[in-house]
Amino acid sequence: MLSIAVSIAFALVSGALLLSLWRLLRGPDKPDRILALDTLYINTIALLVLLGIHLSSSLYFEAALLIAMMGFVGTVALCKYLLRGDIIE
Amino acid sequence: MKLRLLPHPILTPVLALIWLLLVNSLSPGQILLGLILGWAIPVFTLRFWPERVRVHKPLTLMRFLAVVMYDILVANLAVAALILGGPKHVKPAFVRVPLALRTDLGISLLANTVSLTPGTVSAWLSPDRSHLVVHGLKVNDPDALIAEIKRRYEAPIKEVFEPC
Amino acid sequence: MLEMMLSVLIVVGALFTFIGSLGLARLDDFYTRLHGPTKATTLGVGALLIASVLYFSTRGEGLSLHEILVTLFLFITAPVSAHLLAKAALHLRVRSIAPPPPEAEEPLADTRVRTGD
Image (cartoon, rainbow over all chains, first blue to last red; front, side, top):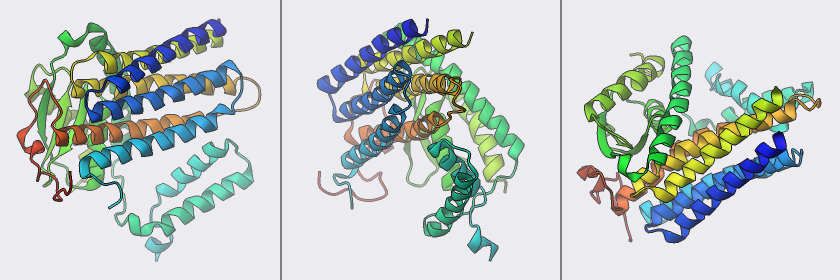
């Protein structure tokens, strides 16, 4: 039961990753691409959590936490760049 | 003196709790280390947090948190339905919400709450902090949306953090 | 019973994640696209993380609550990045279905004068 659910979830999250990737490649504006990147990293967190459940290993938690932090900092830095034309003033 | 030694009484237990979650353990040593970190971090970063946060009505805060949790769940179902319905069903609009809140904490709490709940994202704060521009995914009646935000979220935040 | 609950949580979480990205790919302008990822995806990942907490806590090795940290972190950061993205889009005058508020698009609307485009 659980393994079927995890398989379905893997398929759905992979679909989500592909849709975000499509938006990342297509644009059309810079904020769209940043939003797509933001979504991509959140989807990656979902994929890592699923992998942790699938392999019964809590090792993947640290990776998920690191991606959550670095992804947020990256999004903020990119937005800041768009707003000011500079990251560190 | 009390202010110097324990500048943020709420932050200390929160930091200790986050430390315990991070190490995923409840041993006495880790609790002690968490409390030390929870004391040291606010003291050494005091210059970044000059204001002292005061919670005036904990019960109202609890009720507000429950309302926000419920709204997040409902909001997600509503937004999911709109997305599945396709681009024809959305009716986006920008609305200007006049703010009664004055402090940084109050305004940022309101903006974050608005972003997390029913089909709205806070988009822009006017430089004089008198208005918050909110983008709604499906706005049939802008005035009703403004009234809803003010009544449901702004009023409790003001009551808890800015009672004057 | 527990397995049932876990399976439902996992599938619902993944479904919300998918719907969030579907919104990102499908809707018409930037501001409406912003809604999908900030809400649906955050809740979806939240549900998956709760499933993970349940799964690892019931394996007999004691409570495992550190996934709550990721959930908490996502719920704090998602609105912040959404707000910054919306602000950046207003600043760049990205095409919008809804008429944007005129004062937000003024070049001098920011408290500081911007330099170098």
